[in-house]
Each structure stands twice: as structure tokens, then as C-alpha cells.
Image (tube, rainbow over the protein chains, first blue to last red):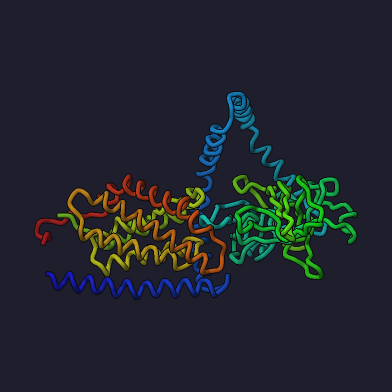
Length: 300
Length: 171
């Protein structure tokens, strides 16, 4: 009996060692293979298989999320605001009967708001959030069959940048990395409100002239954890309330995003005498929790 | 006498992993999320033999890696560790304290998994949070909450994980 236990423990140790090595090998392969490798393909296939289940769960979770938001907001407001909220909730209930009509109108508006010269993919529904606590990604229900490709900008409305598609694009789904993800980066310009129309995405001609020194930099979630624009020169113009839009080009190179897509507004600007760049914090124009339908710009 | 079927344990691990992959993203609050895979592994494999427990832990972890969108291999390592800790704890358990002991094992396994993931993120060249901040605001509450969750559902998991053997099989 004792011998059997001992051999079981030895076998367990051997298995543990071998499987530890196997795990490390898998991790190394996964990191090195790139987005099109076999292990990424396995995850993509699994996501495809789980898509119907995730859709059902997403539909079921929607009321829970709404309730959660209401509960959260209930804790940080005063009595007056609570009463106002109750009035709003009553109004919402009264308007619920026409919800489908309004949604229809909204979708039509989204389709009509297309920018000239841009080729949009079909309206895509957000199927589910994916990823873990370190990533901000969502899955949408359009894929290669709908003309989707990796690394294409994803917008809400005609003009508000949500993120970009990753390499994980299957026949009928695509993964979207949100602008707030730590791996997301985009070249942006900082434009005064007077010279940019966020609804149409139209830039004032003054912005395109070379002698105007508006802030330009790299949009990303900073190492310190805030969402902002890095590498904006201290001498450039950047003020609180300015719009942050994609620049579209870096010198002579065309970037992943067309120019003029709205990313957010400047929340704060600060600079230190000893640092060459400004510290700019951005309030994103999109809220990940509110995403329902998005569109992919497939060509421009 | 109670026994545990390997097939039943594997089914528990598989279902827990599936639930984790589907429900996990909705139940993630910052750095804290229920680690159903690890809870399933810990409670399902504790009465098994060492090699079986380790293999099932690996199976659960690799399944989680495949169904999720995280770094491949980290779930497998976490599952392996959970399986190993669970079977070690299982070998010294006292009657009646199994649920408490295994809940503690879940807490340790979750903390270890969180640290493995943070290491993996840094090794992969991604930007992770600072170690101290992550340990205080992520690892500790995550481990405690998962241990609590494990304690709450542990009795039920132990119940469905065991089969009653007939008297002539009880040797």
C-alpha cells in the first residue's frame, strides 16, 4: 500500500514537471507565433463556437447591466438627484413602448451619417466583451464574409472612433480592440472646438495648413494608467476642452486610421519645466458599457 | 463509501471552465473575477491520485486557455498548480474540514494564478500594473473573494463530485 502511494506521488511529480514544461512551451509559442499562429487560431475557433452561447448570455445580461448601472448611480447622488432620477425612470417606462421605433430610427441615422469617400461595413452588433482584466476588447457579429479585415478602424455613428479590429477575424465575428486598451495606439491631433465639427468630422481648412502648430502625439493608455496623448511638444497648442482626433498621417506615412475621427476631448493639460512633452489626459468619446452597434470602415 | 470518478471530475472541470469562459467577462470587476475553472479543479481533483489530479488540472487550464482570450499557457500552469495543491491538501484532510481546507487552497491557487498572469504579461512585453499595487488591490481581494465563493459552492461541488459505491466495491 505504502509503495503504491509512493509510486503515485512520484508519477504525479513527473507529470507535474512535464506538464509545467509543456505549459511554458505553449506560452512561448503563443507569444512568438503572432496573431495568425495555430494557438491564436484555436482561440478564434473556440470564440466562433461559443458565439451563440455568448449572444444568449449577452442578451440575458443586458437588463442586469442596466440594473447594475442604476444601483451604482444610486449610491453617489443626493436626494434631489434621486427624485429627478425617479422622474426620468418613470419617463423611460412611458417611452419603453416606442423603444423599437426609436432604435429603428437610430440605426437609420447611423446608416445615413456616412462620410463621403469612406466605405463602411454593415452595421455590426456587439456580441460580447472578451478578454481578461488587462484587456479592453469586444466581439462584433461581422466577419470576413461581410468584408471585414484585420486592423480596420471601428466607429460609432459616422465619426467616433471606438477601436480597431485585431487579427482575430473569423467568418462571422471580429474582435475589436477598444481605444482604451493598453495595447491601442493612434496618431492624433488636438483641435480647438471652433475648428472641428464632431458630428460631421469636418476639419476647418485652417487645421490642414502647415503653419498652425496644434498638438500632435500618440494616443494610448499611458504607463501611469491614464488615457492620454503622449509626445505632445510643450510649445504646441493644447487646451482643456479641445477635441482629440486622428491625424491620419505621420510625415509621409499613412496610418491605420483616416484623419478626423473623434477620439475624445482633452480633460487636463499640464507640463513641467524639465520635461519636453505635455501631459494630456483625454476623456474618451465612447463608453465601452454603452456600445451596442458599431461599424467598421473598410476603406477610405 | 464515497468515491470519485475521474470522468465525473473531468466533467465538473469542463463545465466550470465553460462557465468561466462565457460568464467571466461579465463578472470581471477591475482585477477581480470569479475563477470558476480553478474552483472546479480544486474541488474535483482533491480525492484523485497525483497523476490524475495533475493531468485534470492541466486539462482544465488548457481548456480555459483555448476558450478564453488570455495568454495561452498561463491557464494551464494555473490549473496544474491548483490540481497539485488540491491533491496535496486532499491527502491530509480531516473528516468534516474538507470544504474549509479546499476553499483555502482555492485562495492560494487564485493568488498564484494572478501572479503567474502578471509575470506572463511582463514576459510577453505587455504593460501590466505595478507589482505592489496589483498585489494589494488585485491579488489579495481576488484570492479572498474566490475563497469565499469556493466555500459557498464547495459543499455542493463536493456532493456532486462523489459517487456512492456499492458495498462489494468498497475496498
